[in-house]
Length: 335
Image (cartoon, rainbow, N blue to C red; front, side, top):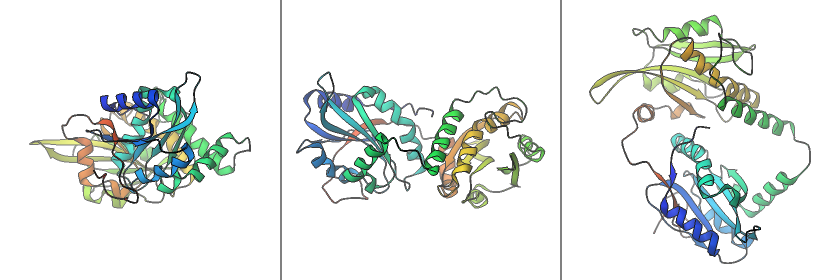
C-alpha cells in the first residue's frame, strides 16, 4: 500500500524510547493528530492490565495501541504488541490514513520491538480473551478453513495489485487474463470528449470486464448509481470550480462493500491496478484522484472535493493520546 508520508512526532519518539528503556508505561495510544497527549503506566501484570485497552477505544475513531508485555528480548528491553483499531464506522479518509501510516509508525519506532500485531474493527475485538484466541490461531498448525483460504487469496491479490507493473499491453489484465469488453473500452475512451460527462461502472462477468452502466449525472447522484452490494470500478468526470478556476477532473473509484462475496473481492483487488493502467496508457486518461471505499454513500460532494483539493495545512503527526476515564466512549479524549 502507498505510504501516507505522515511521520512520527518528536514527542512520541522520545516517549517510546523512554518506555522501552525504563519499562514504566504499559500502554501508549497513538493517533494521527497535530498535538501529543498522554499514557497509561504499568499497574499489574500485562494480562491484568489488558482490560485497560478497551478504555482507550472509541466507537468511530481509529487509533493504534502500543502494548508492553512483561517479557524481554535478548537485549534486555521489554517486548511490545502493536494493535491497529480501525472501526467499520470510521470516516473513509481516516481508514485510508491509518492503513497507509501503520508501516511508517512501526518502522520508525523499530519493527524488531514488536513481537506480535493484531487488527480489529470493534472494541470487543480487544479483550484478553480475543487476544488469546488470536495467539492460538496464529500458532495453530490446523488447516485453513475455506473462508480463511479465500481471505488469504484476497490478501495475496491485494499484494499483487500493489506491486503491479504498468507494462500492461492491450486490454488484458495482468495476473488474471480478463479482457475489457469493446463496450467498456469505448466508454472509457469517451471520457476524453470534453462535451460528455460519464459515470461508468465496470463489472467482472464471464471472465471479462464488462460495462455495467453509463450515465450523465451530477455528483450528488453519484452514490445512487453505484452498487451497494457488489464491488465496482467507476470512472467519473467531475466538472467544478475551485479558487475561481473551472476544472474538469477524472476520478477513479473502487467500491468494495463489506457484504460482497470473497471471490468478488479477490478478483476486483487483482484487476484494479491494471484497469487504471489501461485507462491511462491506452485511453489517454489523466486520472486526478483514485478513491476507494466500502460504502458508496461516502462519495459525497464534500468528500470528493476534499480529496481533489485537500486543505493546505501542516502535515499531521503521529502522537500519543491522553487516556480517558474508564467507561467513556464515543466522544473525544478528555483532560
